[in-house]
Image (cartoon, rainbow, N blue to C red):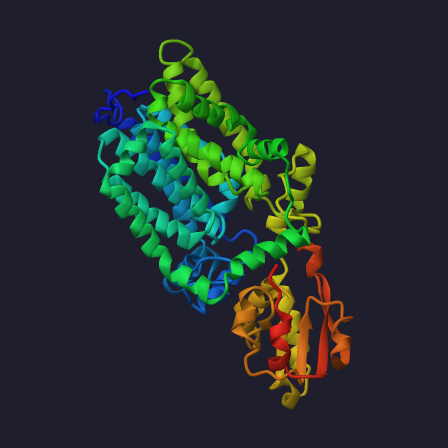
Length: 521
């Protein structure tokens, strides 16, 4: 059966008498999000993963065991441009969050939304708890929503303008996305399959989309070469994580329910309505490729047992679609519902924000969470203590380093010079590396993640301060194992409460034992 002819009609953003109102409101909302993150950047402490990325920034490479190289480059830039304060380290993630708000409004405008739709799409991003969390830290997750949203904007722009050159921009952004986080591969594959399911398959016969694909591949090539040379350590890491049971695995229904919770329940009708508009409405059907992209990724992450937040970068494009649908639905009647829904979003955001952003003092936060009776869905099986994992991982690092320094300084000078500080996790090692200079400590060594590739330095094992161990395994390999201190913080994770051991006379050398000590999980 022949398909009807497809005309490349140019369709620009909606124009009305208040055409500037939408962009002005959206820019104001983006500025508000930026200020929020800057004002709360230093409320708690440095996050476990931030410590690790800063350590990676001292070992710049084209790849790492557990992530592509872009985050280490961003950490290096932040460190050298803005210093090592929490505000400096978290400045770029805050700007990424503000840009995501702005681009969400811009995408709604490109899809035909007027001022209200643009403002609603931008407000929805601000109101999303998982984004409040992501844009608080210097992590890969802070930049992923912006990259995916930029790709979606290129797709919509290519459709509206009938201009395949936007696929070149799509390819460049996708290449950066692959250098940021490997989940971008799922987004790329979903868009590719969605092309075949929609009239946009016509772009596949144009050279520009393939030039864009080539650009994405060329940007990714350095990391790909690194992965090949190191026997794809990321795949080994994923197998180990699956085997350990560290991640919380959700069934299909629970996974979808988690989406509603992590995205703010009040936004559920917005993004679900946006998905329906893309599939069921004639105007929305023009951009159905975005709906198929979302559904294909949803199925992929459920089947592959991905974490519940892996899909979150896809929602801003559904917010934009839902905002346009809501605006059109209330254009003739029910305009009062716009104000009501916007107020409900603001109220729910005020209620949920303290649960995912460092607004309250920890002791007040604990009381607040008990009072409202809401706990965010868990992504990992960890013993966190009174705070959820994402907050617990911001406490105790400097206190641990200070206690290690006390143990280190108590050693005889001749022993101290040969003493290695061995950490059993990258968080502990990163804390020693970040805070250690302040307390006169050498850099740490560890067998965890990329620290294993960096090796044991010049240490032999004659004298080792061991962190994160119960001492039982150490006694099998050292002539003496003595407890010399203890690290504890009331708000840190329970697995960060441990004795610090001084171990002497390893029965081999660290260099000889190192290959068997690899810990990728």
